[in-house]
Image 1: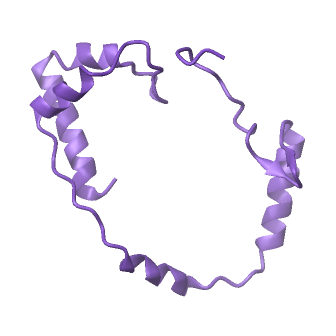
Image 2 (image 1 turned 90 degrees about the horizontal axis):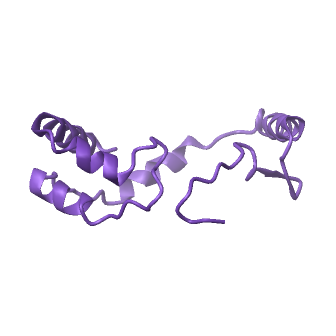
Length: 116
């Protein structure tokens, strides 16, 4: 397997049920159907969610344009693109436009500010 080319995994390839991979749609349906029916009438203790407040949230510094550009120039063009299919080469080309760079920084910083 080449590490620089895109590798398409089946959406259901990694789901296991009864110790077997769900490689067919019928297998996936049986796994989901059985799991739902098993859990359908189970009581749920919502108080476990209260423990989440015990964890300290990290604060992140906002991106600057200089920091963003200095980071993306470090990555080479042979790395695989993410789910959005955007490669580092494309991103470096896009941020040459000042308005595009400002918008990308604004989106990244908005994600940090709202906690994504």
